[in-house]
Image (cartoon, rainbow, N blue to C red; front, side, top):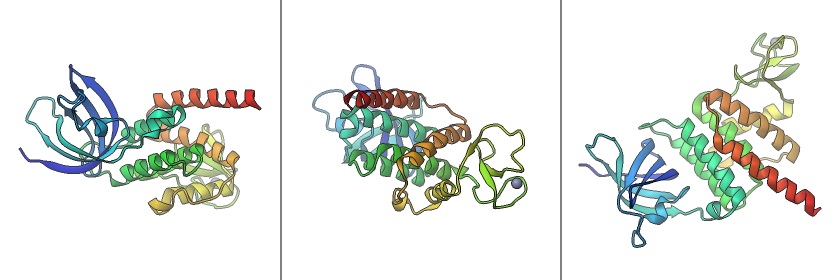
Length: 260
Ligand SMILES: [Zn+2]
């Protein structure tokens, strides 16, 4: 058996048997993998910290010749624990959505550098309170669509090719339409010129600069609402964790309103 080294983020963890865990890990070199860590649910296991949800670690593993095709984890060295993401209800809800969406976008056994970098940067920004969680979510959604090959075409109308009088983005077509070509089309989200520029920036900027822009909270909120629908339509998936995130944030808004 050959040992394999890579780095990855735990995006799902399930108990298995008395003492083992089966985890989904988004790895830099092998995309999304399923792995088993045997005999780790004991207090003495040094691997427990690395097997927690959202932990980012160096991994040593091997693929056993078993029927289930799982990798076996041999060693884990935690690089970032992201502890606040598991102790804060709001952050937990955001991070869980990011993890589920990244899992939905990533393929198995393929190089997924951009997906893992995006997930890592987003979890980092959330953990360290670098910017408003709604902004992180909005950026994450548009960027995940882009790195998955679904960057929207925002510059010219998908019908006539003009670049003025643009109305909005068709979520299914992934392209904008002008007012003349809109017709009876359904599922078109109105986007201002400014919003189109912003989404264009998020889709194509250098990975380290995706959060480096100013936008008011209303714009961020609206682009988040459009972004979550666009991502779901383009990836052809619904995310359970998004419903949960909405419940948690609605609860927070209610509590804030009562205090004010
Ligand atoms: Zn047109």
